[in-house]
Amino acid sequence: MRSTTATSLIVAFLAAAPAAAGDRVDSLIETAARFSEAGRALDPVALRASCGADALCVARAVVASVPNATLVPVDHPDTDSIRWVRNEASVAEARAEEDGRLYLRLAGFGRKAAFELAEAVASHGAAGTIVLDLRGQGGGSLDRMLEVAALFAGPHKDALRLDGPEGRVFLDLPEPVAALHPADLTVLVDGGTASSAEMLAALLRVHARARILGTRTRGKDWLNRLIPIDHDWRLNLPAERVTVPGTEIAGGLRPDAGLAAAGW
Image (cartoon, rainbow, N blue to C red; front, top):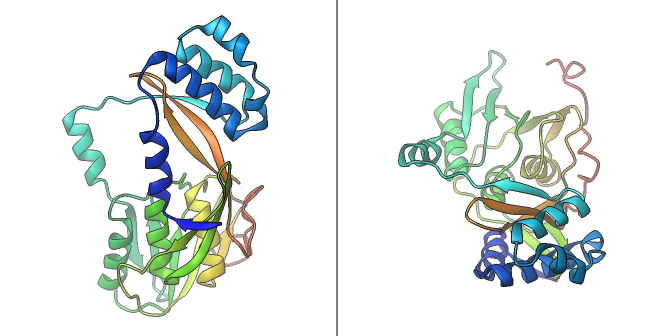
């Protein structure tokens, strides 16, 4: 068991990805076997016989056999598109309600997500309750999600547990990017709240005593590995299972109450 960062997991994996087509085929077969029982059931000899050095052919066979594996087309954006994505705000809405609550809608985990949230809170003054809306939020960067969680919960050791082929790994909540005025925290979720967004809700329930309102989240309790296939395709392969000790993500995070029952 060890602690590490989410970035180191992904960078180490992709850095090891071979460039040659034949090597990619062997690596895909080995990786599929490494990450899932269904992958281990694949016949390497038959795959090499039918696909040869065609890595995309092997990737399609992996997708057909491994649950939740997908092929992802590579976007080749122009410079203006890259600039727009980099500048897109993570906080889509921030407003003070008449009852004194501060409403924040987090649309993504951009490079400055935690800083944007801290600035939004500071610009509206001290609020007795902060409402963080994660409805429809499909996830994003794991590292940036941990920064957002730390903003509300503070630093915590071993806050997130990953179980994968290398064994068990723990991720910490880091030191927050800013100190917030103490406030009650409410998190809004629904069936569109997935992946790192539902991990955030779970972390805030455990470490910030947040009240979770809405409907059950999607229940994506695993991390993916994006494996290069060729210039146009990546294999999205389920890897580590994710657990937030103290609550349950598998099958969807259960809210404490519905929106109507809580007066929303």
